[in-house]
Every structure is written in structure tokens, then in C-alpha cells.
Figure 1 (spheres, rainbow, N blue to C red):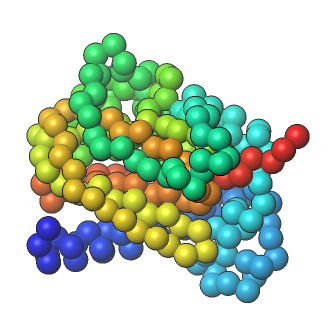
Figure 2 (figure 1 turned 180 degrees about the vertical axis):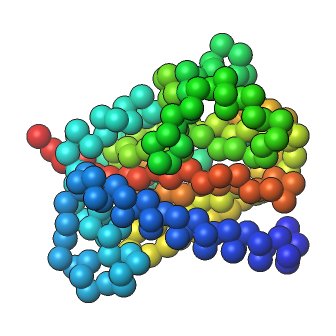
Length: 217
């Protein structure tokens, strides 16, 4: 990756972080999580996220997203997880969703989404049993499937940001085949996980996965 591309991608990371903070405020208003006083001592930009992370959330918080994840990891394995697999070809035939959900909750029939692909660039989704989405809240220790659409295929980079009271960033080189590819994600640590990729200098949309401890009882 040359210097120009690195600078472009780092700028995109900053944009992703700002988007992530805005989403955190939206879902915090929805009452999914509890507050914690130490957030008042932090920068305004991250205090809302810290409120999310300090206390477990009730299991009911995950109900709207139950179709998107599976519980696969035991507590002893959490620290060993938090990985996204490399992309593999994904056969869309027979696995087409009913529709797709954008971050603001807008639902679009899959046929309408697919018909726009001729003019769209790279897309990233979370695959569910009946729909795809760009946002999910899941419990620690669960897994989900990401689906990437890269019409022309090519080599690029996959980016992951993990936002807690700090932000960790990571990226790797990946090769995407033309059409759809899938990647599995195992949630090994709580926090906001922000994913996107860049292929042929074209960034995909951002996918956000909030990972929480689940309250007992």
C-alpha cells in the first residue's frame, strides 16, 4: 500500500469513528444500556460509549438482532477470539435475503437493492436468517457472518476499529473475488467494532457491531 492510499484510508478511519460516535448516541437514547458515572470525567466524544461498556445489558437488548448471531465461544476463550476470517466466495443463489436494513432502520427489498448494483461500488453487510443489516448488537462470545459485495473483485485492505475508552485500529491485505464473499467474526471483547474494506481505491460502507456483556438472570 503506497503512502497516498495510507493517508486516504486513515482519513476514512476518522470518518468511521465519527459515524460510530453518532450511532452510539442514537442507540443510547433508545435505552438499551445503563449509565456509569466515570464517563462524566471523560471527553464528551467518548463518554456515551463508555456508559455502554461499563455494565452488562439485559438479554432483551439483543432480541432485535437475534437472527444475525450465534453463541459459539465460552468465557475462557474470549481473550483468544475477536477475529475476522479472510474472505471466501459466497454463493448468493438460494441464500438471497428478503431485504436489507440500513443504519437508520430503513428496510429495502433485496430485489430493489440488487437492481442498483450496476451503479454501486463496494458493499458490506451482516448476514441474517432472513435479512441483511449494517448494524447489530450482540452478546460477548457470539459470532456472525459478514458479506462483502465487490462487483469487479480485486486486492485491497480490510479495516477493523475497536472503540472502548480508547480506539484500536487494525487492517490487513485481502483479496476479494468478483461478486459476493463472506467472512466470519467472533466477538471476543466488548466494545464497538467498526468494519469496512477498500478495494480498487473504493471504500465500502461501514458496518457496526456493538458487543456487550450479557446480564445474568
